[in-house]
Length: 354
Image 1 (cartoon, helix red, strand yellow):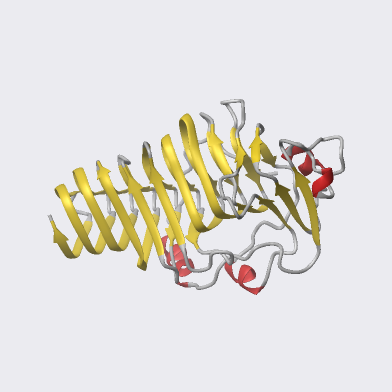
Image 2 (spheres, rainbow, N blue to C red):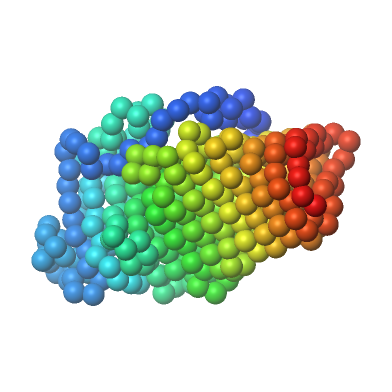
């Protein structure tokens, strides 16, 4: 069974830019797992539940998410939804024993909900009311391996180790918050995982990386619940907003999306043949940064609509056959535009401001 790799694992893999470009050109959205077909429901209430109950109705809710997951077979064979009442869940949610067809592609999501999947469903009327808060600082809020997982309206009070970690999975995040408890390594970590995000994704507080996309992972905007809009915010002390390594990718398509970086040292860092593509319907905004875009080792960043205010070092950095392309933008208080070597392509289309 697949395992979540340590955060500092260094994988060396060949380039995958062409594959990423192909995926970026495809339309469609991830869908939610409760539209049709076989369904199973379990209920959890951290305040009023009891793990001695059967969890089949809200009145008989379990107390812990772990107890609810224990009711799900290793081979789930259906769509399982775990309904979480508002409250603080003092545990790490672990999904590492399930046998599921995890290679769920974009076209399968277009044609309907996967017949086998897991959902953690919070209070959609009050996103952030359901909070995972592990008491052990050496653990994460959620660890998932080899699953098709939907997380909706759930917040994470991330301890030192991290927030949401997924390996070898398909993951959909809708209206998710990751808040560092004190100082956290990483907010959302993807390893060999395809992730879709819709609604609002907020990563906040002192942490090394807000979103890490590693080892052929792909993060893209859009879900059926939030088909045309994603607002991703990195703020409050996140050192690197989006970190891509070893063929990791970020792409957007057909939505009206905003990626905002407030007070990060680096908004986007891409290395090891990794690429980020923000189309012309996406706004990339930032203020009070050290460096906005940094690409090294055959990597690149392409952004169409850019607004940056207060960059104290270079707006763009690139090294070793890398590129940063900013198609159009508005810039204020930029110390200098580019720090690049001869192999780097930096094209500033119609930049205004200064």
